[in-house]
Image 1 (tube, rainbow, N blue to C red):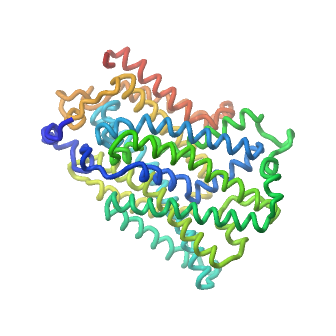
Image 2: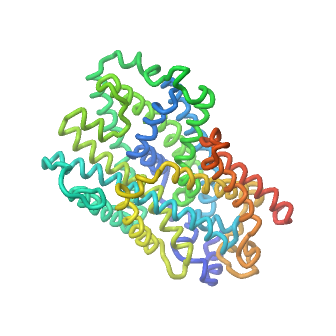
Amino acid sequence: MAHEDLTVAATDGALYNEDLAPIPHEQRKWGTFEIFNVWNNDIQSLFGYTLAASLFISYGLNGWWTLAAIVLSGVFVMILVNLTGRPSVRYGVPYAVMARASMGVTGARFPATIRGIVAIFWYGAQTYFASTAVSLMLSSLFGLSGDGATVLGMTGVDWISYVLVALFQIGLFMMGIEWVGKFLNWAGPFVYVVMIALALVIWWKAGNGLFTEIGNIFQASESEATRGPVMAFIAIVGTMIAYFAAVVINFGDFARFVKTEAQMRRGNFWGLPVSMAFFSFIALFITAGTVVLFGEKLTNPADIVARVDNLGLTVIAAITFFAATVGINLVANFIPAAYDMANLAPARISARTGGIVAAVVAFVIGALWVSVISQIGIAKFVDTLGAMLAPLYGILVADYYLVRRGHLKVQDLFIAGPEGAYHYANGWNRTAIVAFALAAIFSLATVWVPALGALSGFGWVIGAVLGGLLHVVLMRRAGLAEG
């Protein structure tokens, strides 16, 4: 791919700006370590820990089997992102541009809008979660209490913390992707140091007997178990895959900064199955320790740190939780939302402008977290968004590998007129839209239709497979497949 060809394609204007343009290999600065830390920060957020701890508790499965299910999900996610990352390493384009091949140069705004909405929602939520860590630190250092008047369910300290986190994230984003990478490189290893320290404190307090309890402490009796062990194991794998759904789709936004595919694959290996195994073991160890020490199953790291009652550990842990949650917010939500916004009107909206718009909307969402959103069943809403994203992944992968046979006409990704290969019908590939609609309806039904409740843990996998299969079949029937 010659860089001059991109300049020719850019003369069409409507689909091009510098943020969406392919990045030449010689300008890429990311390697294995940066990709490894993308996943470290994804896994090691407050939500990531809470989810892992909740899985040990919720399904009543032996703790070691639950750990095995989480690690297996890491293997699957690694395979999934290797598939979505490969074309972006080769062509240097983000997901918003990749989607033009399957959806059409105009139709690509549809999946970008869906992905952008999900990203903005989670950006607001994760900003709130990060602010709770800052609030914990300020309260511990200055002896502030959580009592007093509240606005939208948050105290004065909560609001100060929330605004500080929001401004910090915007500032880091405005400094550019290289600074984001440097922040992730620092935050990832630091999280491990603190989590290991917390595990050692729990071990010291609970004693060596904790090791004999890890396997059975969460195991429910046959009468208490809601699913059989096999179905519970599969459901845990499905839930963890769904947790990564958003990053799995837009992984190309980060893979495009990597010099070689080999570096990407190594980063994915160390950052997913290996890192998930280590971090999930720590989560298993600490969560089991809370049962032994406190007689209850605590899944929120802030609650656990508070129970340990050590000011030094509280401050260090609060900084760690803040760094980890900001890291995942930038990786999974802020940067993708910025690209998705830019893709809606490339000639007028840059990624930086898109990021500011996303941050403003997300600020309102996060501010309403306590008083509104958390009261209306956020889990089901998130499951619904995941079910909508799943067919988009299936269509993206099936289109590139099975319909295009691993080849894209890069210049045509930036051509709006009918002479472009991805113009279809007025810029829309209606075949892909039909495939998405049919798959999304079924995957959404696994969340909302009681009769399909047994499939609720598998909604993402079902939606992705069905979306990809329908896309290939319909494209071949329409005579649009290559080869």
